[in-house]
Length: 498
Ligand SMILES: [Fe+2]
Image (cartoon, rainbow, N blue to C red; front, top):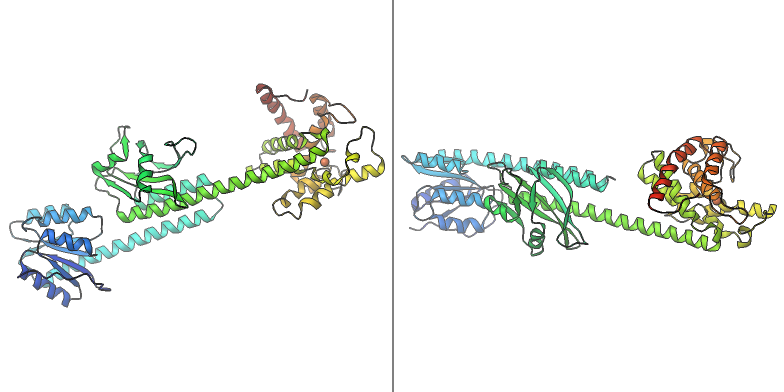
């Protein structure tokens, strides 16, 4: 009598069991009994047969005879383990082969049952195996949920790119028990070159990035164990070679531009197909983070170029102030950095420098370029440029954060400035910085009404006016930083004010 082989159907809720025995009567007895106990059972009459059935179905547990012609029980267990599913295996064996059964357990079998067996005993062992499997599955699901939760938390924050990538590498390492994790991105300028953007744990290997990327492009996945790992990396650091390796692509809009990979050299640890899929999800997040940072950077460049364009437009009107906005921008950033302001503030103040005199665009040319003193009316007109500037940029969403620089850069520390006559710290810090940067460049540049003053005279003037026209803290930061800056320009052979 042949063992019965059922077609695969969905058997909702019931544990799926595959019974493998070359004795048909054992298959039949076990099927009838186990189905009665609430399991769904399929049977196979040989190891070969079992592999065919196993490949086409999802089984929670395989119960197999040890001694069979062809692929025997031991071999079957090994092959099932190679398929990376979490299927439990139990071996059935007669007296005298217990040692082989123990061997099977070393290869991953959950337990063995001695023939002849009582059906209740089989049920008991099966239930124990399924209970363990259930716990492991829950545990895995929980760990993955926690990992992905942390990931989404991290990436929804305003964390800098490098921190985000480091966090992703950490999560991969912790969630998948990897000993080393790397995120590498191809260099668009030199094909075949890859730059590691984040790495955690041991990573002293030469990894075949190009081969990995080509594999992903071909639509294949990378999960390797034992000797197969050597296809992806060269171990030349003398440490134990990885026993398991997995990799996933970094992709945006279908294009692969990098890889995330993980390895372990721990004996008996192998990444599973599920973990490789998990790594793909982490890779997707890393790719998004990198892409967002790139787009943000592009946007920022466009923003800076736009403001440089405004500054050019302004200076085209007034040749005497050629390069003034650029230099005020540079000096402002110099002061902001010397005062220890955070990078985003330094950038903003630099942009403010480019834009500070934008209001002069609204003033008649003749009122700006005069060798003689301005008439009182002209002076009133000139003094309106911070107000004009605010009027121009305030309604523009991407410029309105520069209003304090534009509107308040002629305020004075002692309250003698304009347009508001603000005193001390009531003047926004960026405007106090701008006032020093603006005055330094004004003093050390030629003007229609006078020649440029030497650097030392300008320095003396700042010392004299510190605490009067200028914020003393700002003056101090400027004087601390300007000498080193001039030195740097000289080294590069660039001109500095005399
Ligand atoms: Fe100004």
